[in-house]
Image (cartoon, rainbow, N blue to C red; front, side):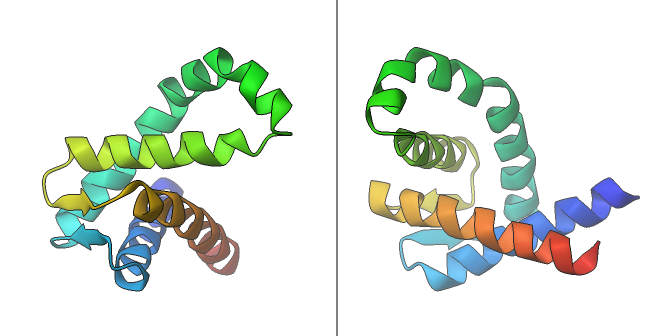
Length: 111
């Protein structure tokens, strides 16, 4: 049951990011839930591959390139999920940051 609460809280974090950033459009709760599920999948399986191949750039930038990878994975999920649209890379960058921070805060509050 804990995973269901985390899923709903992360979906809420994504919806909040959609309200705060004008370049992110979410057409309902179902696309937000699907996007969060797919974002978890992408962060589990695709993000480590991206981190591995960009390791020299990540070391050179002292880890800040991870933020770029987060934006890329956020944009990839938006490209794959109908009803979840990200207009620009900047919106994906800010959306990834806001979703992470708000999701973490909500999980701390409700757990």
